[in-house]
Length: 183
Length: 283
Image (cartoon, rainbow over all chains, first blue to last red; front, side, top):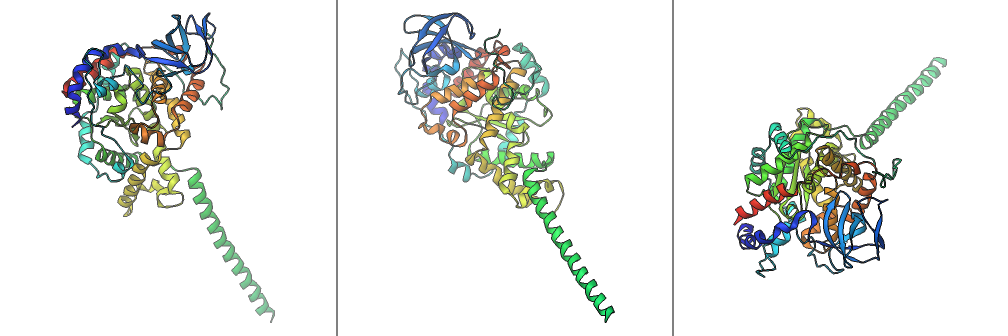
């Protein structure tokens, strides 16, 4: 069922979703008055001061920072926790522009104006309560399991490097030293 | 006379002694029961696997798997790579994309992890998917669902899930009850501190696996920006703390610890290629 609905959306999707890389093309608003930094560090120089509610265009995310362009044309960096995604206060569940879902669901693109809605297959508490067990689906799932060597090859192709890192504590419970400005 | 008195006194003493013994026995039993709810004995691996596959069967009865082997293989490779960075690398890890437009992710005991198509399509990179899968892996590592089943059962029969290990007559019945209770958790939710803990584990595992650890915070930010009335979010918002709160706590916990890994790859292109190929196949 979803397949059928998605079918038409896909044409539009293919056209525009490659703009969606890591937040590009998305907009956000500053949550409070904030300094636009020249680099993604707390102690970097200040490019401009933005009041609360300033609309910015996201260029990309890097770690906990967003590279943005302000309405005034300034470029710089903001902490990701200092902004809320979405252009205006009344983003009607239409946020996350640039993600695959939005394109697949609405089927809208600037050039075609095609609008197609997919059927929404939900997952409600009733669905879960009334579910009949599907052990054959669990068997199917088993057949998708990856072997260790596949997982390692998958990581190798992306040059993902294994790191040794301890688990972290809740900042409220441990002696959470604020090292945000260091680099 | 004195013999009778002696006998009487002895009788009384014996009575006390017996009463005291019985009382002590009750106290011990009570302490034992209280102790169980405070310090639950872990379910053994076999019991965990049995409960997990039963809960997974119920979940898959409510919502089927996406029928796309390539997409499922992709998620399994990524998921196993993350799981290999953990203290439970040897579990039979299974990852699945659920054919639902709802936005959610689930774990079941024993190594089952699921993400909905709706959530997958709202992500921008492999680092974001890694963060979500690693959060669910965190629930499995910490046995959050098993503990919740036992805690909720309080002093009932389920509190002693450890007896699943024994081949007794009650075994099947006990497992069924645990499976029902485990499935119910998808509607009721886990303790919010379990969610916060899984968030902290998720970002560490993503970083251990070589990804930018800020993928999970980025997903939380996406959720935060969505309309809370959106029906696709109903179950997730009912069962989890608010995304804004999770984001704040996670950011604070990561500060000074994980920032140095922020430049690790996000793998946006491989993610877009893989999911895009899937969307094209759906035509």
